[in-house]
Image (cartoon, rainbow, N blue to C red; front, top):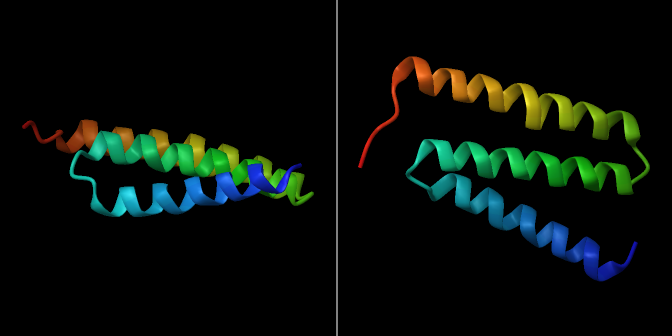
Length: 80
């Protein structure tokens, strides 16, 4: 892969991490976290670690996102 693509993915990860920390809307934070996990899975695949990439995609982007959304449904989402 090109170096520019790798740098753009790493920049995207840093931006996502900062946005999740400061965003007020919980559903938006979950979507950003899920995209962070998917990009992280791509990076693991680029590092020739397919087992970790599959685990990150399944657990990080899949299961964790579903659990977070379920928690918001149970507790209620704050309206503006």
